[in-house]
Length: 413
Ligand code: SAH
Image (cartoon, rainbow, N blue to C red; front, side, top):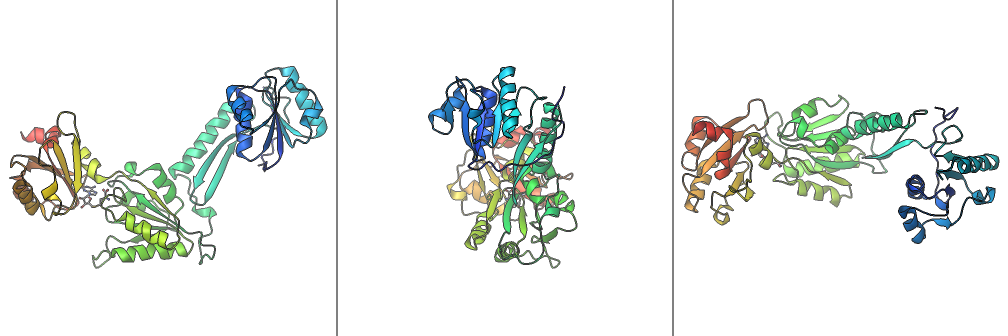
């Protein structure tokens, strides 16, 4: 199988330039779309068009010469030509005419006669702009696709460190800093999203919480500045206004800033305030959702927050103000965050407001960590059990009949 004798990779700016596509089938249609995406002016020469191309022609997005290819005149004014007629004699003729006019031409059906070849391509949006990946393996389009996919995966997974290519020092007058509020999930790497990993591979500064996934932070290269706002040496967390200030200042210095938070940024995480603070200073902010502990930590203990025939809904709360208005049936699951310290008062309030004393309760400490621990009881017994077992934060408290579905309840009853 032959192919281009020499293959210099280039990118072409087709904006406003004429591309002639000969042939009206699906291969032509796919390529015409990509020429249009790049802003080209497209002329299609073909006696008939497949549906995709017909739509483009009817919408006036391409010029259609509704006939067979009629010689070099059809290529008049073209910067680039593409032929995919399915008739090798016609494709050869188009390629030969293009050659004599010195117009680069892709012959989609004959890899030996072509003067240009399209590559396997992917576009990846990084925080610093679009990257086009283009792969070409002579005579083996399948290999091109495999390589393209591999590079794309490395980019979107964060396996490729993008920091090296980006100027990082000094104040930026162009203001190209950015902030991403990234939900880190409940603490384990595997539950951080691909987009989260990708942004971490571009960040200059990472601002972390106590409950953000530590292993991810530990793997960051030494050049990345990690600011821990969850705990300072004196054990005082940085106040929210201070965190907002750090995000804004670092971005204004032209840095890419990832604010890595536990769980989801918008679930009891003050992510909305951080976004507003950045936007108030005109800083671009991306919010990347995370796997919230409210749902995933019960799951880590084998407890589904809803289950057919057991519970149809759930409420996530912290604090006590909301308790009087919550549903009281065991078929409505309550998920309590930041609830360890106030547990006795919470359980008392729940009972006063109508939950039954024997409603099952589970406390899941350090969800997904190797030393995760689950304590099960009822509204009546759980506060004493928690004291007896020295239960500590971080923990998620689950109240409702779904607790019976987990292995710990089964083992205890
Ligand atoms: N935005 C976070 C919640 C922040 S509030 C989210 O969506 O998950 C902090 C509370 O989350 C903790 O007090 C605890 O109740 C809970 N939490 C977070 N991670 C946890 C974990 N790995 N195990 C148990 N509880 C956790």
